Image 1 (cartoon, helix red, strand yellow):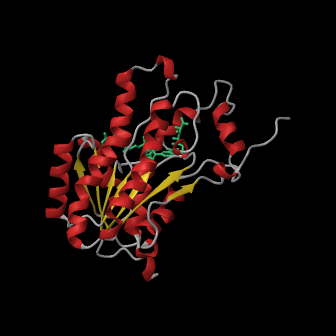
Image 2 (cartoon, rainbow, N blue to C red; image 1 turned 90 degrees about the vertical axis):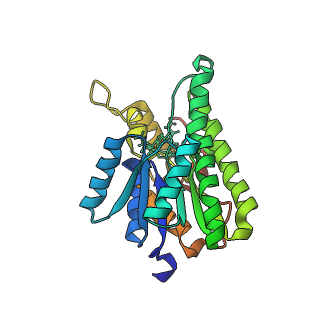
Image 3 (cartoon, rainbow, N blue to C red; image 1 turned 60 degrees about the vertical axis):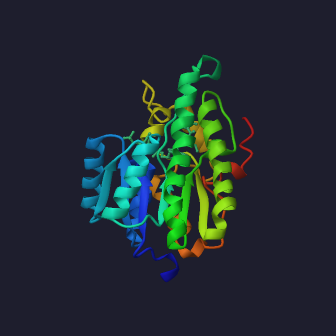
Length: 264
Ligand code: NAP
Ligand code: GCO
């Protein structure tokens, strides 16, 4: 459908060698976009390029750490030169550290904030000037259930993802007049390497208690798959969402709508 068509659009998806970033990049490519992506390690960039190739997608891979402002500036300039001006930025790269707050060092806390919040700021500020010159663009930040909810051990992550929600609204407020739409996707619990430790089988072969907990908290009664995020990303990257700005689209199987089951 033309309203979702991304032909002649260049999309940069950060951290897209695997996981949610890969699935979103695949979805954008299937809607017609040309894909650029980055990872921190050369081998993961190569692996990503190969995985895209297997799907018939020519993706342009680059080594870049999103927290390095100078390197990000060089990355954006290189993509503009080799691929074209970035029309769509998906701020996907991120990490989590699961440590009880009173045991967490300030250094660990800062690292999470640096990658999950400052890195998104650096990426966005680096693509916006060319978007303004070109007459518009789309920025999609990847938020979280932790943009709304807290839980044990994820204080830094929740602080970063809560901050990212407000950065999303601020970018929309500050650059909306330039036809830039900045929205976010808030994924629920998605089966990726990031959440693998929460889904590990127990020694006796039973499900991890957190695994069963999430299934019971999710009206859809399952973990999400990375591909569940592709359609919402295409919507937010396309002209279908031209009057949607500063919105957080939760794609969570209903977690945020649900009070939870009463205990038996
Ligand atoms: P993942 O499987 O751990 O993948 C994260 C990606 O980010 C990797 O490609 C990683 O690449 C990249 N990355 C991390 N730090 C980076 C840095 N400094 N510079 C460049 N790339 C970096 O995670 P995921 O589950 O797909 O999650 C992707 C995003 O969705 C994250 O922002 C995450 O917080 C968010 N999210 C995940 C879930 C979930 O349930 N899985 C739910 C809500 C939100 P390298 O380490 O190889 O560089
Ligand atoms: C955790 C999880 C999360 C998810 C996700 C939820 O330990 O609770 O890893 O925080 O990855 O962000 O939306």
